[in-house]
Image (cartoon, rainbow, N blue to C red; front, side, top):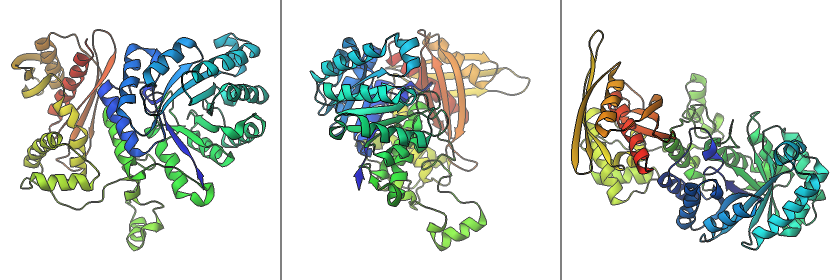
Length: 503
C-alpha cells in the first residue's frame, strides 16, 4: 500500500484566508495540535512576508519536534535567506521555493521569458540547497502551464537539488481527469523523477480540490498539500480531513494510506474554528455537526439495527466523542478530568482549574451539562484566562422607548476600572463604555452569535472582529449562556489581542 505524505499549510496558505489571521500563541497551539494529528510536514509561514511572520516560523520550529517544518520562499535570495534563518533550528527543516511557470504569469506578473525562468529555477534551487538538504520546488499555476515546458522546469529543479516537486492547481481551474493526466505525464517526462516526491496543491475555486487531489494520488503523487477545514485563499484548499478519511475509508480503491492519527481530526477542526472564529458548516463532510446525525425515521431505524446501513465511518474514528457520563453541579474535579480525558483532552492542572471554575458556574445555570458544553469550555480556555483585561461585572438597562445604558467593570492588571455609556442598543452601550474606560479607539467590524450547544439554556458563542489604530483586524470570542455577557467577553478578548500586538 502506498504511503501518502500529508503536507499541512493551514498556518501559511490557510491563514491567508480573509479573517483567518492568528496571533503567535494561537499559531503555536495549532502547530502542536497538527503534530498530534500526525501530519508529515507543517508549512509554518512565509518568513519574508513580515517580521512577525519570521518570528512565528522560528517559534513554531522550536515548538515542533517530529514533523518536517517548512517556510515558503520566492525564488529570490532574500526570501531564501529569511526562510532558512526561520527554520534552521527545526529538527527537520525544509525550504519551499516557488516560481510561476504559466504563460500568463510569466508575461504579466514576472515579465520573464521561459529561458529566464529556467535559469532562475536552476540558480535559486541550488542556492536553497546550499542551506538545507530538504528542498521543495513549486511551479506556481502548474495546471495552466505548457506541459513540456513544465516538465523541463521540474527536471531543472531536480538537477539543482530539489527533493520534492509540487504541482499546484493554483487557481482551482483543473478537473480530476486533467490532473490525473498531468501527473501521469510528468512522471513519464521529468528527468530524475524516481528520486523525488511528487506533491499536489489544489485550490477549491470550482469545488473540486479534494477530487483533484485524490486523482493525483491515483496517478502516482506521493504528497498532498491541504489545510484543516479546507481554509485558504479565495474558496480555500483541499480539506485535510476529507483527503485523509477518503484514503482511509476507500483503501480498496486508492490502495494508499497516511500516517495521520484520525482520532485527532475533530479536535484539530474545532480548535482551528475556535481560533479563527469561522464556524464549521453543519453539513461539512467528516467534522460538521450533521456528519453523523440522523433525523429521518428510516435512517434511524437502519442505524439502530446496524450503523453501517447509513454510516460509512465510525464517528469515534475521527475523534467525535461518544461518552454518556453525566456531569452536573455536584460533580468534582476528578470526574471532570476523566470526562475530558475520554474526549481526548489533556489539560495541565492550571488549565483544569480554569475550566473547572467555569464548569461550576455553568452547572449552576444549566440543568444538564453535555459533552458539547464541556468541549466549548475547553476550547475557550485561552480566551478566558489570557489578556490584561478581564470582565468583572456588567449591568445593562435596555428596552423599547427607554435609554440603553450599560455599566461595565473590568479588571486591568492590579486595578479595577468602571464606566457607563448610553448607546443605540445594549451592546453598543457596552462597547462604548469599554472604549472610553480604556481610552482606546477600537472599531467593531463584524459581530456574530451562535449557539454552540442545544436547548433553551444553550451556550452562546459571540465572535467579533475589531480593528485597532493600525487598521488590522483581530478576532475575539466569548462564551456564556447570557448572550450579552458572551458578546462583551468577545469584545474584551479582541481588545486584549490588540494590546498584545502593541497597538
